[in-house]
Image 1 (tube, chains in turn purple, brown):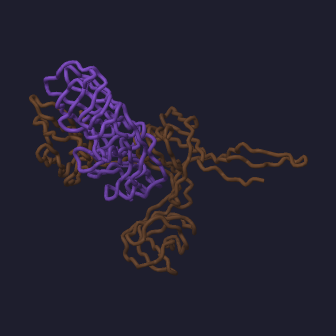
Image 2: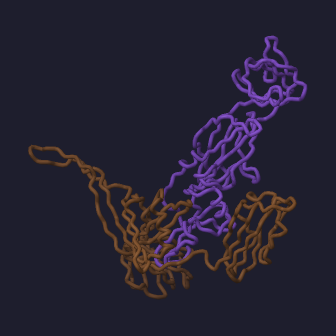
Image 3: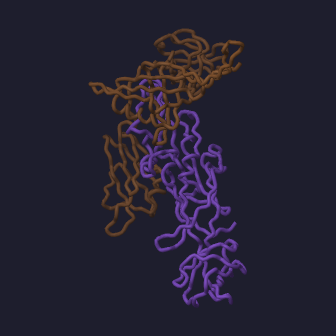
Length: 254
Length: 301
């Protein structure tokens, strides 16, 4: 399925569920072949190549030209490469102009692993919720989409009882990704689609300091291991991706 | 600046450590030439990436701060990797909880179950129904004691499969352990635990009961939701222990972990039922009152 947006940024590989988890997208640009009067005084657009997604009347497009630097509503449609905007025709546009179709797809937030990924079949692939964000404009006036999924990730975890000693603690984290227009977000610099969210209250910057390994996820510098009895502590092990639940019996790691 | 930390043990060799996800976190960064990389650390840097690092043994605890840059002139410090070498990744504290780990001498057959023969005696004679943890390659995990032969020999609830003698493994006997081990999710997102091995009180709160008049006799329709409360006391705590237990107060989820059976029970902790005192000798005392999340079911009439 075609899409009119391109993924721009993704979160770090590990993020905290309670801090910002932001994806951004930009709208694909199309070159204009002609901008002319439609015969009724409105601006008619003819594109060099058709829009990736069939436009609907009422959709907005963004024109990036000194004469038409704004978002305009589509008034009527001849084809995906020819339509009339609900704005008055001003003057012939001499310079090359780009157009962005400001259609916002529905984004679906998924948690868990797909088959053959990561820890599958643990943490099965599950829909968390769907969302349709608004179009934002950067300092230069260029439209883009930004999605902060933190409000969803805060409530997507099911905390159950303890996992086995030294097992990966799948209760405290989950992979996430967004799906839209039949495609999914990708993690840019690794061969994987998902990023990982820890159900943590600390900031992303603080979390980054833990994940290289060796440090325990504790409120103190080092976990206190009881000389008798049982002690539990979670750790990002050196060289591993996922946190494990460490269990000590009588001071000895088992 | 992106900062990542890694904590490694002294006197230990590490090979090809993928620095967490450093190749993802520090993409296309190259070592700042001003940063001095210690001789014990070797980075494998493919063009634009840090792939992994090797570490040869470091004798004494030390912290290295290594800077990375995107380049430019002069190069800017865009990321930092802190490599900390420590003698131990954990600290230890003493507790009065009753449990003993001892070496196993041999394992053989007794009526189809594994009989454990110890090299030394248990401190006290085990009882049938109590739990042990064994870490043999063949027989492992938590198991109940089915039969007590002597202070140095018990039969466990694991089917016999093969004799082992000598056997290089340990068995842990938890005894009649009444200590309360609380496990909780901390702010950082991991799990922490602490054993309350001193005084404890139990209490019960009766739910909102409903009655009816049966020819002049008041009888209960039901007894509501009845919950059991536990109050644990711990004194003589260090400031570090208090800092650890403080995070229990705000925990989103906590459990009472049964040391004997390896089972855990969800508990609710009211933040107001958490008291801390400091004595003149600067030793701290903490009192925590919690209740089991699962209420007692009482029949109706």
